[in-house]
Picture 1 (cartoon, rainbow, N blue to C red):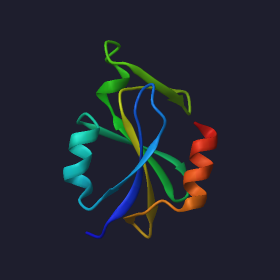
Picture 2 (cartoon, helix red, strand yellow):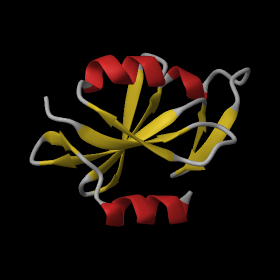
Picture 3 (tube, rainbow, N blue to C red):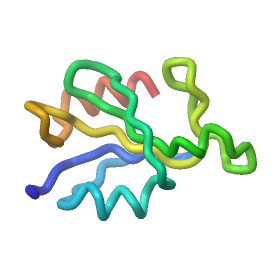
Picture 4 (tube, rainbow, N blue to C red):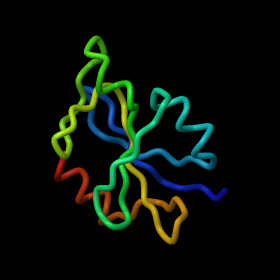
Length: 98
């Protein structure tokens, strides 16, 4: 897999960009398994822990699309059924929303 830029959003921190090359391996270290995917727009997805919405002992992160998300989540691009790097425009748009 090629290197892709994703946005990582941790509780009480500013979102930051990270370059990864293996989404399955790197995602495991960032987001609690099992994962859930939320479509934000046509080519933009948010990946968060399915269980993190239930575990109130974890630090609350954000509420997005009426879903309370606890712990770390990531936002990534998705184009032609493949994970893609976030564009500068997408990153700016996300930072304005968050």
